Image 1 (cartoon, rainbow, N blue to C red):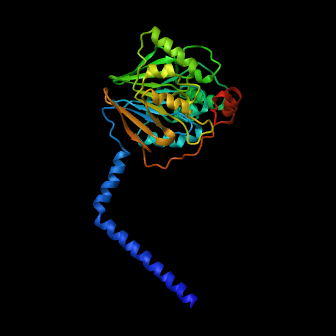
Image 2: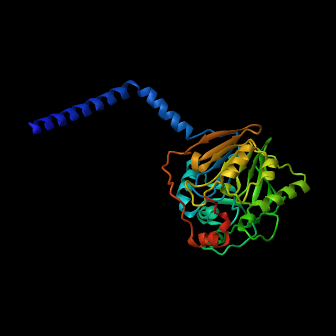
Image 3: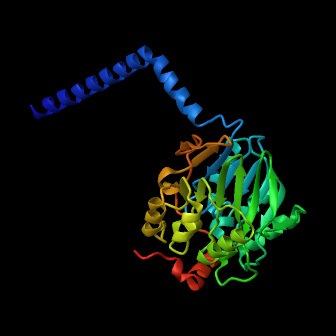
Length: 340
């Protein structure tokens, strides 16, 4: 009797499964046009028409930075690359937009979470100009980068405040570093202000408060307006950066924090987030929003997209980086680790 009941239960489950499959087939046939439109919308959203606009892609590379800037004339700037284990993600992202050449590549400073994939970018892409700070860092990551630059016979443009560069209808000016020697490698970060029409973006690398103060002084002495629309928040939202007077002078509409999910540094610091929001900026975060695209028509900036920029299944694993780079962080920069 028990066996008969069990057999009936199995038969009932089989019949139910068949009914569900038939229902799905009928539903798919009846609503095929709507489903097709839905899929088309997804594909269109992942292939945004950015022609005629300046677009800035804040690419989610985990606990690191990588930013792609696209001019209306379809020229490209790449700022940093993230760790070496993020290269496949970065390369796939660039391939999705059919990018093979950069007008400018900026490596802000020699920490692996910013230049971990730099050697491969130099090796595999055509680059017209490389901009870097005048500082040496004794790591394999940095040595590999220098080797590839030499192999491609490329010259390094030293990051000197006041230098300006044309980028199609836009231009950018270097604002930092302002000193020849710092205790923290982060303060060597190349900082640029990019202007397109009446809109302005600031890219800060990992600059800390010392560099922020120097930029304030430099801009005051040279009559440079520091107010901007979009801020790339320095040092992944760490408490080492983004002091109140600096944020007030910038007065951004949007502030983008680039950090990894559940990172060991507890970035971003909640006080920094509150400080920026209290100044009226909307916070965007790559750990929460993933890839972020902000566009400008020369007068208005707007968020074009949040989430994955392509249908590629990117890795979200924590970055590993070179051991020696992390040893440097631990031994020399213990204050980078946020309080829990």
